Image (cartoon, rainbow, N blue to C red; front, side, top):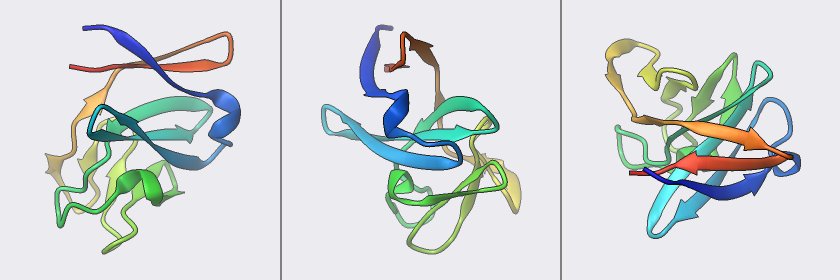
Length: 101
């Protein structure tokens, strides 16, 4: 699976999240705990835009109904068996690359 440049590190300040689109698919790029992570940009609850949410203690918070997902594992905070997909990222020379299926 290829890595695609989706953003630069300067676009994602520490403890924040942004939404990026690859084709018609949204992804949430999180910068928390000193690391860049990537999750599906669609909340499993009601399809909210996770990349438009906020970071709270290492979790991305959906702006629609406040569901929280771990930025590393994608686990839903109240029921870890439920989760959003996570994706591999790498940072090179200040650019963020996302591995997409």
